[in-house]
Image 1 (cartoon, chains in turn purple, cyan):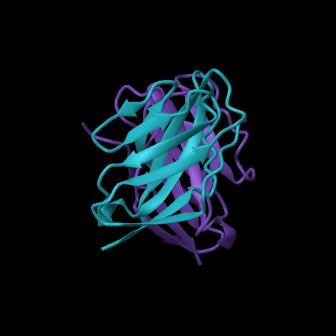
Image 2 (spheres, helix red, strand yellow):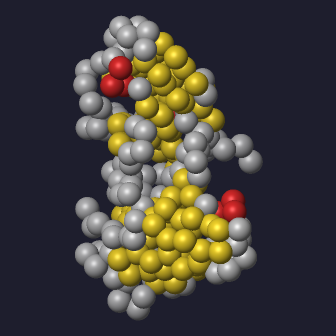
Length: 113
Length: 111
């Protein structure tokens, strides 16, 4: 079946612009996670959604970052007023429910000039 | 969260078995042992997971020590496509935390 998909695959933007990154989880998965991975670094957890519950935003690095999940499925991560340090690969993962195996998408490579 | 310890890198020859170790001495009874791998320029890929018993799937085998304080991922016949960073992590069933990947083991496969 279809895995987690993300779009765009690559995004180049100018400092100060807003960007939106999209994630389509595996159908039926209720848990959705956003991570980012800077070059040569490990995964940094950003935010987690479980069904229609309020998201766990504890990993968001600043108030420029926000995410929403519509209808318990598709999620959008928004970065406002991008900075060069936001350049990274942004990964989305989903699982049947929390605490179970997470399946990752291919990521969105963001470059802020 | 219970942490895991893995060697920074390992090297093996193509078509030979590879045993990737992981120590998790502070594992709790509800922690599942998961292995992921990340190929260059790709997102992490689920490999295998287990709780107490050894597990086999089409990708690999997972051998879990009787006291669960360590485990070994076994690739029975490595190929060049298996060259990746392999991560051993613990996921608590029902837990809501995001995954924390350490540095993992960089597996190098020689032709």
